[in-house]
Image (cartoon, rainbow, N blue to C red; front, top):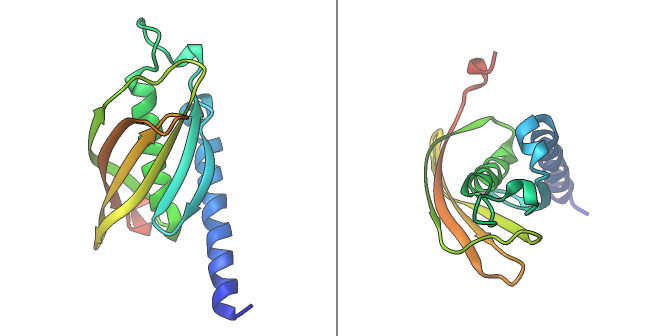
Length: 148
C-alpha cells in the first residue's frame, strides 16, 4: 500500500466519523433513524425506514421526512473535507409516494464547487429502484472562524 492509499483511507475513515457524528448528534436526524450506507469524496448514500410515524394523513411518507433525508444526504456528501456546510437553497421534486414499511435511499453527489459554494444532486429511490424524489441542493461552506 502506498502512502497515497493510506492517506485516502484515513481521509475516508475521518469522513465516515464526521458523518456518523452528524447522524447521531442532531436530535431530529437521529429521530428519523437515518443511516449511512456509503460515502466518498463529494458523495454519500443514506437510508431511512418509512415508519408509521413518518406518514401523513394519506398513509404515505410525509414530504418533510423525505426532504430531510435529502438534505442530510447532501450535507453528508459535503462533509468529506471536514469543513462545515449549510444549505442555502434547494429545489426538490416529489415524483411518487414513499410507502409505509419501505426503505428509501438517498444518493447525493457534488455537481460543482466554486470557492465556498457547491451544488449537489440528490435522488431518493425506493426498494425497487423507482425514483421517489429528486432535487438540487446549494451549499455554502463556512470559514472556520465563523464556527465559534
